[in-house]
Length: 120
Image 1 (cartoon, rainbow, N blue to C red):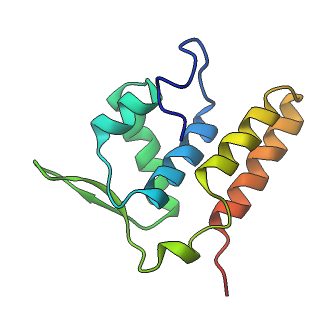
Image 2 (cartoon, one colour):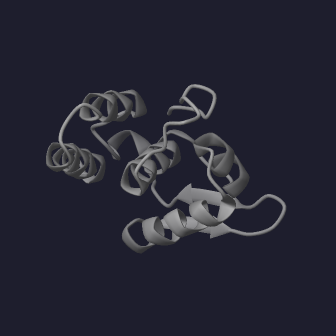
């Protein structure tokens, strides 16, 4: 994932791109927190809450409150979760930056399909 330090400060992700990257974080890490995600993407906690509300509607994500709380995927086998690794998502998003809005949307749709594909 592109950490806040790696992403230029003036570059903001589209909400859909950020949600794809959050999904990739959840795939790669066993658990993460609201504060970590807000810092990672240089956005407010309210923005992350909205992103997580959206993601929990389409993915099985466990939300735990309290001191040791956070977000984690409800999945038994992370290796079969996705064909894309975070580095692939970053590359596709960087390549999409120079494209038209329509082409950029198509790249986001391809990423979404590949991120949600389940191996038989």
